[in-house]
Length: 265
Image (cartoon, rainbow, N blue to C red; front, side):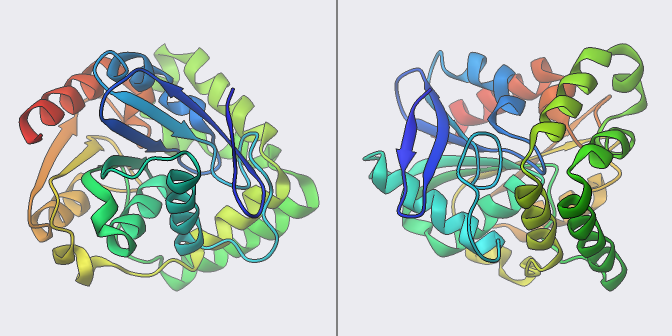
């Protein structure tokens, strides 16, 4: 797999296909493999790049505080290092969606289109922030194994947990392999993230919002409100999916992305 040498360390990524670039950013505390179904499908028409964010997968573990803004800046540096100068489509799920939103706000000229999957524009409540900081402390003490046990009930729809145990197990395996420092840093980055609801109207490019109908973390109503606040937002609700729609029902998600990309070029 290719490696991009950023100033602070090496970023692991996959690149498949040819054509306009679609760059995909994973959720917490996962890696690029959560996009495997989208990589296979979209790479027939596009050059699909999926990165391991710093602190996750096989990428370097950063020094200092991890923030959503810092992660967005690394995406921009990644594009520089890999020689991609033209505006690209950027997609992200959950934490990756937060990074994609910050990228859109910080580097609008580098973005042609935006795909936001199961993510939030609002900041966490004080109570959730406290829980995330406690999670970070525990991850440093124990490693991320407890997250692998606890998260599937919130990540996946009940139907997915019952009918696709391999998808759930593979996700748990990825979580267990996450560096403790990455899991802790990502949890703190989410806790400290800015509320960008008031800035959504600054994003002028076409934006696709995908949400699982049974998502308990970023709800349909919340993402509908985001879509209405964007200048060119399109919301697609995915039946039978929770917070991990691209993994749970990839055929429907892939069709939604392909149709939107074809219509929005």
